[in-house]
Length: 360
Image (cartoon, rainbow, N blue to C red; front, top):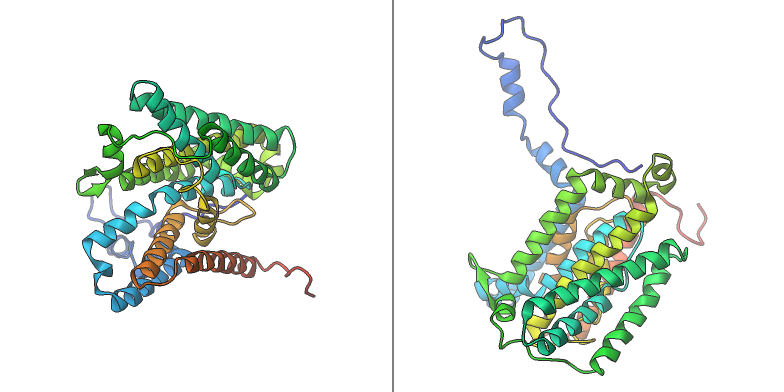
């Protein structure tokens, strides 16, 4: 079972001979004053997250020196808005990976949800809520299908979701006829989702923050989260301890489907129509890269939402910086692939596992 590190509590001081109600001892005061030492703060942040923060700072310094507008308010808001779709998928991908699985089909699920939300909106008298609910309902169904294939078909999660990646992409194209569907930017709700702001923050960024906080609380402070870590860390031990692994796997894929549907709805609002492929293409790679770069062990049992979000910001800053300085956009794919390889290599080195094909 995987250990979940928590910030250690200060050790209790020596027992005081003074009576209850007497002033606390100088030892206790020293312990309290040292509760937030730099070492404790660094330990709480984690070495992996510190590396991401350092890399993010370096990127910001480099790109801001190359282009003075990189740190402008408008560009920073643009970075935040640009990462919301794949950020949502990266957060839920983290949950799937912690559980010892993977969902390569999240991008295609977002494409299906995008098409469904726009088509239902158009066909049901421009009712945005029906479109949103239909998209989320489809997300639930697609997640259940993934879970059933993996659990009852006994198919490896990577192979299963690789198959549904193609199947769901084809489904989106069949439903839409292979072209964008509907027009939603004549509706106030979709306009609000695409361009609205609350407290100065774009609505998609707020949605990402709410989902991230919810998933963080689920993983860190609930029995469900502890069981997810346990399944990913050692599924045999988890099964022997009474955890229904099949139920958890299906539930995790349903959660992935719901969040992918939310990402698809934001994609519809942003583009103004249902997009079967464009806009959702490559999101699965971005989500896996962010989760791995954020410290999620691809074998399961380890990962945090905070690390994934830092990786999302890092990728967003990198992609935006390459655009700002005029680098060919094709290099973004090269950079993402290189970062994914680097993240996996670092994980292998830290785990101490023997490299494939090389002597120990």
